[in-house]
Length: 286
Ligand SMILES: NC(=O)c1ccc[n+]([C@@H]2O[C@H](COP(=O)([O-])OP(=O)(O)OC[C@H]3O[C@@H](n4cnc5c(N)ncnc54)[C@H](OP(=O)(O)O)[C@@H]3O)[C@@H](O)[C@H]2O)c1
Image (tube, rainbow, N blue to C red):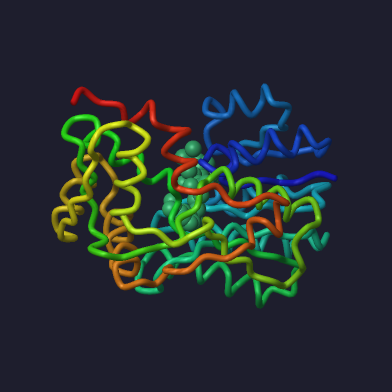
């Protein structure tokens, strides 16, 4: 079984690819920068250098491929990139099984609009597919590590919103399950953590884990935008995140299910698991 993985150097696939190789699968990692693929190479992946924005670089990546894991970035060409891959698969005519890495977020976000375009194209393609739709990654909380360290506060623009946030390790393990035959064809799996939580709950978890008071300070979207821009995120992505956060504020993803368990065979990791496993990044002076 050979699987082509796009988005190979990203958060999910850098966990997924070694797991597939350990399970005896052959993996072709589609990367745009070979220098970033060293650890994937060391794990045993075949490195294919191409650019999802350039359709002519995709065809050769599909030779002798049985499955495709279709994961794309968040930028303004995300829809075009995904559709480029779908069209290349159709051109190849080899009918690989496609596991789509989608997302569960507010349709008011330009990021989700790009993702939905790819999902719609896949559904209309006649190809065999399944889709995982994770909600907010707990690992996004790393953006609060610096303020938790310096003044014990999480500044976020969710007001009292709650979401079934998920650990990216569970996203990767669910993707693994889907590629190992645990997902039904033609089905979408919304992926959540074990419970829907607010940022107040996250702060409480950090307080317990770090042994010092951590507070959630709700901020307006404008302040959140300024903070993300100062971290160097491109404006398209910042605006997309703000629109996603408006959805989380309004309870778009205030839900939890057992799809991680279905695809992985184990319960999804909780926020307490996350704060415990990553506390070293949040340990501060006070
Ligand atoms: N963060 C969340 O809370 C969340 C929640 C649910 C769903 N999602 C969705 O998850 C997806 C991203 O997954 P992720 O976080 O695992 O990935 P990621 O860390 O955002 O990485 C994106 C990957 O795409 C690659 N890429 C970008 N442009 C490319 C191009 N032109 N040609 C080839 N490769 C290209 C990047 O390569 P380089 O390393 O070279 O840049 C990187 O490997 C997005 O669709 C996002 O909407 C995210």
